[in-house]
Length: 143
Image (cartoon, rainbow, N blue to C red; front, side):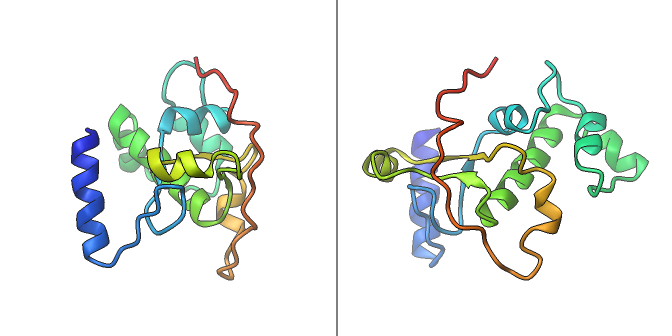
């Protein structure tokens, strides 16, 4: 997996798509289980109903809703929402003490607490929130 990512990273950089390993740039690494946990969507299983309750602005017709019952499709949706959070500055960023390690090892974007409701309303005018390096996510044990 690491070798595959290294190849993809090189290709993207060659195409002019900046890949910043420390969480900056146009590409972000996410982990859907961590995002679900941060957004209180972790009741032991993936639940489209639970997600749509937490994000009522996310509209799904019956067929789409059924498609997201597949765990891989659901995780892809959570990853897309996490990427939006990263684009809006709603994920935890590395602090000064972690920056060197993040540049070498990479940084996984984890949403800020309570950020899910902000994904629709925040940034409509293109504004990003200032980066936040709070580490309320760093010590969380994921079930």
